[in-house]
Image 1 (cartoon, rainbow, N blue to C red):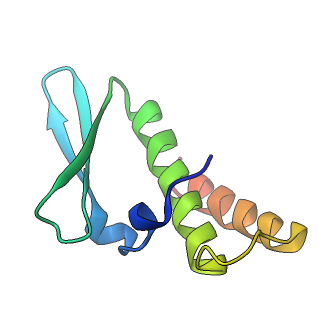
Image 2 (image 1 turned 180 degrees about the vertical axis):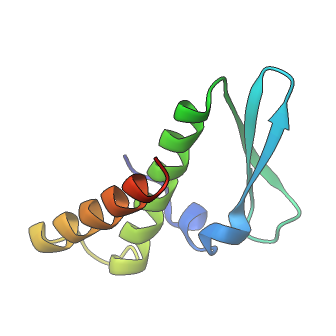
Image 3 (image 1 turned 30 degrees about the horizontal axis):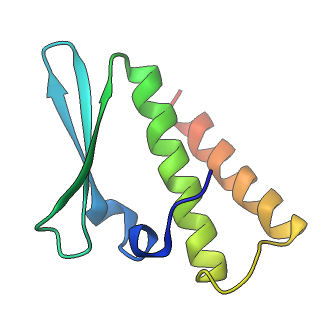
Length: 92
């Protein structure tokens, strides 16, 4: 998956907010100024929410590694996958 440069510039912990809803969870994605709501994603189960947040983490790590100036190397891609899998394992 790819996220545009503007979306990846903000630190991931400041960009996303998770709310509990009566039928699941809502992930809010805030703009770079924290004043603009970029998107809201409904997640009916914790598993769907976890997958969405892990995807966001992967995008953030891609940005942090390349700063949108180049493509990832195979080694970098594997390192990011390893980090995401480690996070996934820690929250099972």
